[in-house]
Length: 222
Image (tube, rainbow, N blue to C red; front, side, top):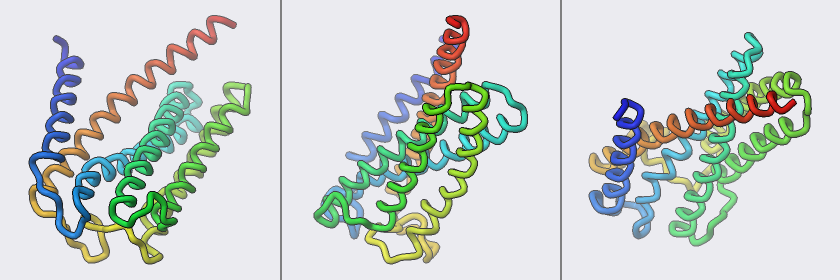
């Protein structure tokens, strides 16, 4: 078994333990309705991965504009796609949490509204890529767009939701500077963040490899 296979099995075991701990190791947290606090162990890491992926897409886009190497365009596109996927998953888990806590899947809370705007921005990134047939021009325009799109991420994720009153609980990162989860909840959340980060790296590596093969075959077919 090579190191890559070993890491894959370690990651799968780690995520299995995270799921077990989220449902069986920790009790429901205080100030949450029913079992809703368990969703936090998945919702928060998904939101974190979305931000991380958009950042990687921005960095890869900057590298593409500087070096004009197709591999950076591949990395930017794959990262943006994964970022959009995890943003959707974060929105879905957030909606389930909202239904349990406040009685409705959608409340037009500042966080819900801002993440929808963010998803529209990055959906437009792929619309742009699909609308430009020339590969080099497509990559250049997409790179510029990805950089500008990421400028909105800190405001939509961290600033705007805190400007207005929000239903969304801030148990980990808040203006009071306190962690309102107990030690066991914090341990599981940190483990989940680590696991989802590893999962993202795995998906990202596979995605880049698959996209590179797809583009190579397209070129060979011309």
